[in-house]
Amino acid sequence: MTIQGEAPAGAAEDLPVTGHRAVGERRRLAALWSVVTVLAAGGVWVVSTPHPGDILPGLGPTSSLPATVAAAPGQVAKPLTEAQAFNSERYFPAQRGYEYDQFKARRTAARDGGDCQGVQNDKSHNLLDKLDCQAWLGVALTRNDQPVITSITVLRFADTGAAAQAAQAVRDHAAEFEFTFPDGVVAPAAGIKPMTAIRVETVGHHITVIAARYADQRPGDHPDDLLTASARSAAAIAGQPFMWM
Image 1 (spheres, rainbow, N blue to C red):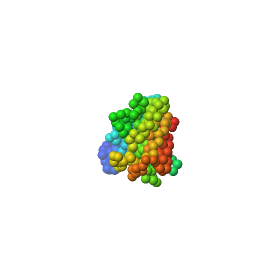
Image 2: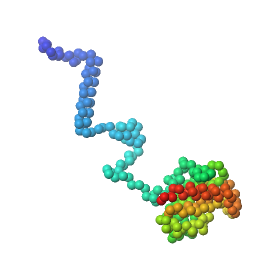
Image 3: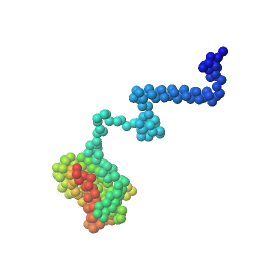
Image 4: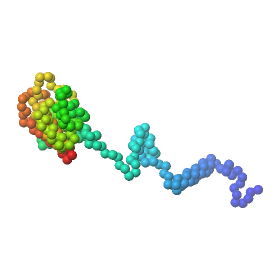
């Protein structure tokens, strides 16, 4: 006997396959929305913010790289100290073009050091002993329009007073600082004295030592106008990053 308003016993079993699927789908959707409603009410959001290297942004870290540790609330990441930031790539990046007056060049070598004796030709004697030289960096700039290479050496001192005190000693012995050669270029053979224009400048608590030569290392006792102009322009370029420090 069937009561009016009630489905006959076994009615669910008698539904076709598509009917079963529709019922199941509706039940799954209802359950899913119930979970979402509960999570939203509790202030929980399950989709994370994208991380660098995520394969699918928004699904949490999927990269094998460790995540960057965020600064604590109310705090910012500590900036680098001047000593930590003193390197050739920071002040003379490789991708930058260098231009001053008629001088146009590119960086063709770079190096750094924490001991100022390391950039001196004579490693057994420190020209800057007791003059508080704290670090150095060296770059080579090669002119785009002329076969001229310039070596820039920047010496960092504790303060402007220490740099001023060391300036004369650096000028007197400027030729005794190593020349930074472009990658692939070697120093001239012993006994050959390349024609060189040298310029020394004090910029804040830094001293820049500039030397300009022809790429073919041609000898000469006195620099010509091209080398002199190249050294002057390279000195202006070298001093720009440190002018306001």
